Image (tube, rainbow, N blue to C red):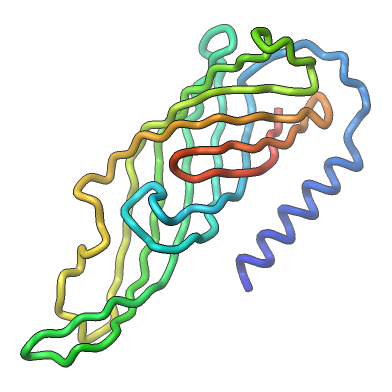
Length: 192
């Protein structure tokens, strides 16, 4: 229910901003000073370990201009899930045990914009990016489970992802973006 409410608020905000956006599109290209808020689908590989199914991910970053057509964006993401694991031994009967995991990936994303190379107009941005970071993971298991509590964890919380994406500028201050990634792909709002 909570996920549906968050998605509804996001969708309503996106529609409201689209309707209220100005039609003045003759502004110059500037990168950076942008807050990106998105939602995505992650899971199979994701940022940390193997989950085995898709789940919603919340994304937040802020881009700073570093050089011409290049930005750095510190980011934080969040996802949480509950699943079951079948376990037992000679002292404990085999059965399914529930566990809950919350993952908070934190890092920095470097982005290079190819707008000039592609002769894109001021309405569009096209980019390639890479992100480097680590994941903070919190796991809890059902009472009575005495097996390996690190069953689904990767040996290292560090990750490196590649991205390709685009942004459409609705107005001078607001855009919508699509970021396809080897980690978690997202769609969302860019607030300049």
